[in-house]
Length: 271
Image (cartoon, rainbow, N blue to C red; front, side, top):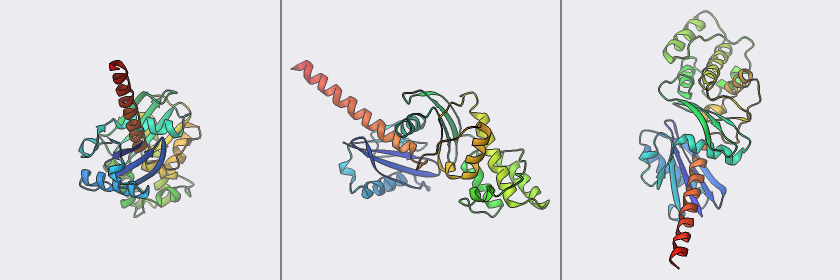
């Protein structure tokens, strides 16, 4: 049985291919302007990596903000459910997920079986998201990939009082004019993002193991401050951006299993 999970986010599109319960391939690319096109392209790439084509796929589940725009999907499933499924599959001891993507952030509380206990999501404001960090990287003339390592060299992180993109940009411009070091400003921004997400998820409750996913999970500076604020070690998946796509593929497996079971029961009843 071969299934595909397609997670189309605002910033990136991801596809995971699962064959008989094992991940055989995945790929990631920028979403771009046309969601349906990105979904098709990334799925084709992931299938090619596994030596497969679309005709080999038994079932497709889509997730993410663009899930209803994936033309070849069999079913669309909430990204909250898919993230929980994906994380539980790889890290069964996980009880909390902190996911920071390009345009949203969320904290998900999980039960032992991987089902969702509670969650909170910020998808209305860029504060505490990858987009916020991208804008700040532009202000500081820093590459987004280098911000994490740069912030680790800071000895005195600046205090950034606002996570509103517009106000934070003004603060950074003022701090730079006052002679603040770039690494201290970047570290201050990372701490502001970490604190914003931490406060958002307090009503969900943080239980170990805590797993960090999404594109911003690759930023070691944000990871460092989250661990400091939460006073615990955070688990980082090998590829933190594919949890939603993986969970979607696992949902596809479940749907096929239910369909097969239903068919078997129907045949037994009529025999």
